[in-house]
Length: 195
Image (cartoon, rainbow, N blue to C red; front, side, top):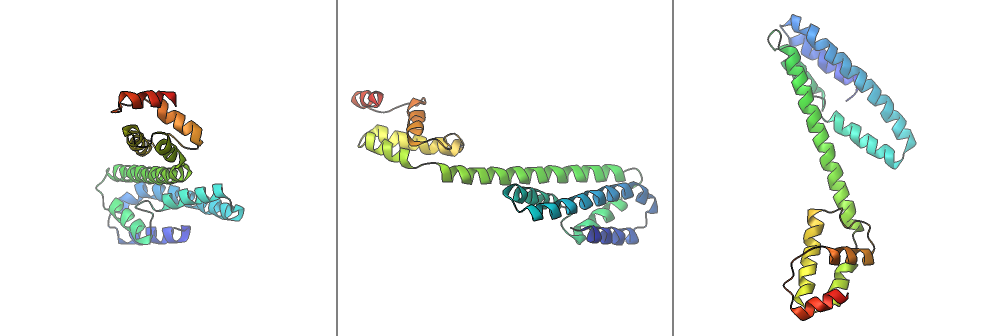
């Protein structure tokens, strides 16, 4: 969304309203959004010139903000202001503040969701499969082998960051030192305690 397109959509909404008194309450919100858009445009230009990973993340965050429901495109901007201008006397401010608060919450939720998904993908990529192989070799043909493999998979799903960036030895130590119920025979338990 650019300043020009946002202003055009606002002007179209104002041209269709019958409630001229509501313009007094709506205009400050429009002005605040114009200032925000101007700031974002300047920052985006600066970030594009840096071309760094941090810059990409910031650009993505700004993009998410611009995709909030009333700023997606000219049609949504116009609909937002038409609805605001059509409110009864005294309710315009309530409508606008609640709408913008809900949009902000939605934007925050989307950013958190995307960040979590990216973190989970990264942790899955960094997690070594070697410890599962070590468990298979150390406890071959025992119920302990299957129990540990199942537990490792379950723990990784419950908390993808739990084993992130551990080397094979630290991973195995973490898994073996965790509390878990074993169905192993007495001989298998003795063998497990040796390792």
